[in-house]
Image 1 (cartoon, rainbow, N blue to C red):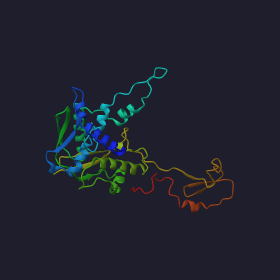
Image 2 (tube, rainbow, N blue to C red):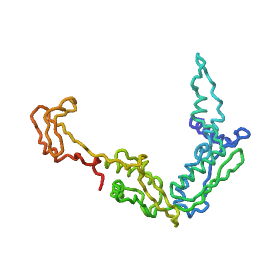
Image 3 (cartoon, rainbow, N blue to C red):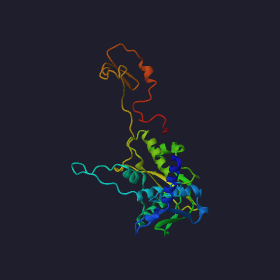
Image 4 (cartoon, rainbow, N blue to C red):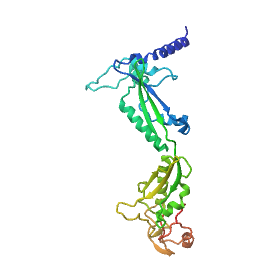
Length: 325
């Protein structure tokens, strides 16, 4: 029998022994072998197959991995490998475990996964949270713990769907006299939340960040997403929701402060290689710009530079490309 035959026999033997992993579970324990998700009303679920995978990603814990989807070989290796011996150094401190036994048990092997009711309840809450974030308002998750044969346990989760909701109306801040509201209105085409589209919380969070960036780029440097809040009206019926955006003022109850450029000073003689030179000299003005030349011959026309500057004194400090009123 050649080396290839020995290797094949070894693999077959390990896979066969992997089937007996549940029989090695200590008395009084049950191996958690995974969970199943069922739909009470699958016709009320958008893309049921894909949705099931996304929902099950919130289940904790995950069971022991299977080789080829059939055998818990890594669990069997863990169970069959003795605990590596503990070694101490000259000071009595434990030395990191090494050797083949440690490699098999702690690198290749996988300890058994057990289940407690806290895991099941937490998984239920996580799944229901995910459903709300995807627009399944009013949908619920129930569960049943199954005591299987051969020292194993599993969980069956059942989803009762109330349907995935779509956005009916997106209502932006209504006060047209407020400058921030005008910025949002003039840039609403950049928002991901749209009428007629499926509701998704991640889109709302993205829109909050988009609005905050637009407002900051319009001179409101202290503005942040925390000043933007929204509420969702799920009572409109027909699996639809209305969304309302609003802007909150700072804690001082004053309006958000918009910053302006005060002075714009140009140093034509400045060089990054000589940062301490070119900062003093003759002063010239063009419109509201201030030019400070070093004590050398003027080699640029202030009118040429001034007409091409985008940073204008006494104008709103904003990022180029932002649409503002």
